[in-house]
Image (cartoon, rainbow, N blue to C red; front, top):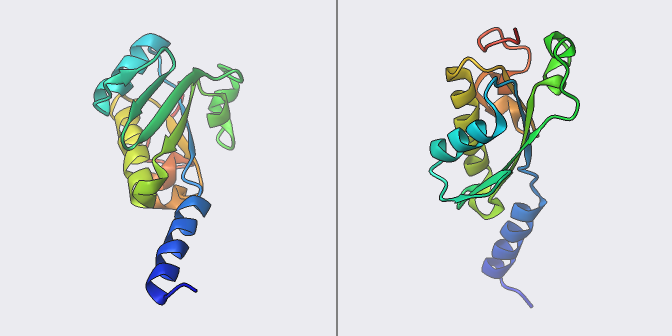
Length: 144
């Protein structure tokens, strides 16, 4: 039989693995994909860089051209972000918790916005990100 301490530790472990920290980040950067990947790697101090991803202790970031990219549809105020040029799949290290996920996505959003790139996060914790993850925010860049 488990004592209270063991029960709490097991409950915490299950809570960590039940949380979904994965995030899709749509960014309409005008840089080519290799330059964009290198900029992301530099931003998050990644030493493990592959042709389509970067890996750090805080998590993995997979970068791909958005197969749904469309130069006109990206301007739609409702769901235009789904047509941005790049899609980043962010897989934060679950064992570091939700705060780590929020920090990693926030860093990527702030980078995009500082470069004047439209960017929107789609995840379970959008409301905890700056500008609610960028969706319908008047404070972030819009597609040109």
